[in-house]
Length: 417
Figure 1 (cartoon, rainbow, N blue to C red):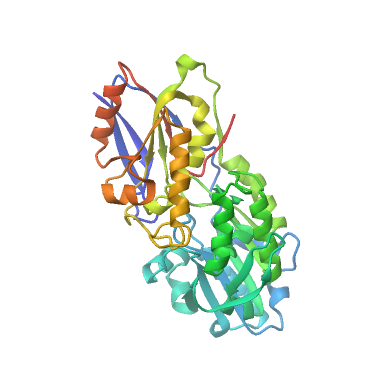
Figure 2: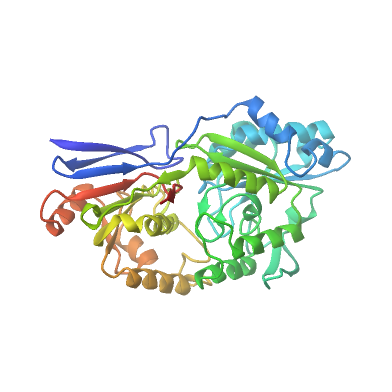
């Protein structure tokens, strides 16, 4: 007999985004998942959010009498479909007098890989792809330098964006290790900034400045300072459901609307953690990286959940990150590629983390990766399994009998003690 647990798996990979883990009958398993809420992906809900903005005029009022508009949309590494929202943005811009020919959508790829046609169809829908001009941001080209932020961050920004008359952004607000939460101004930095700006932003985080998962950090404040200097007329912030639907939409000022979105995020993503005595704690913590599991370069998000849930694990517990990574190793021009400006600093940060938790063992499970992929991002100290049966066998050699396992279902969960 076996116990089967169905995981959400492989965001954007297809219609059946699930994966089944099988455990021996004698394992004691507890599943932890976010609160969630209903999906409100419908035209009326979107129109209501856009027509009742927080802290700004409506898109129609902002765009009236203007000639050109930019819509910045988060890339495919983020979970939510933005098509229905983009269609309503275009409708409002058209009503104000800006034609489709004068609207450009920019993929906020930051230091990630460029998006292709299929990615954009998934993200914003075929109608938008065939209707307006779409461009990928390039962190090395088509940039303009303006000044430095209060924190001293050099500001290089996408020139097409900077020169547009109307600037609109769409992004999902999920917990983030560097900026506290995604969404809001973060779609501008790092989304459409130059490599020097990205390097300064990420370097500060790797040095421990302003890092915080699930709250407003100094780094987030610097991001908002940069956004204020380059301009963002209208920010649309999405809260996602368990299954990558829309739980809430908060539109308007890139700070005010973002903070309202965070209030809902703390409810929807909330994960209530029990208080356990030492003999009740888990022998193994399994941290699923969905919906940020398209590629291995996103796997560092697992450490955020681990750090929040560490109180539930035994001192010598096994920590295993579960990721589809159906795109493989992935790409990050700053942190993930040899020769990248911060690649060595990233590896050093990984080594510090693993040394800090020296009694625990860390591994990654994925059927779509190789050992070389793991050592590229995580060093030789990180274990690796591409068959889940090997995970079971390894744990059973370490635990005398009846292993106790906690499964954390999503990377966007926000654990609360």
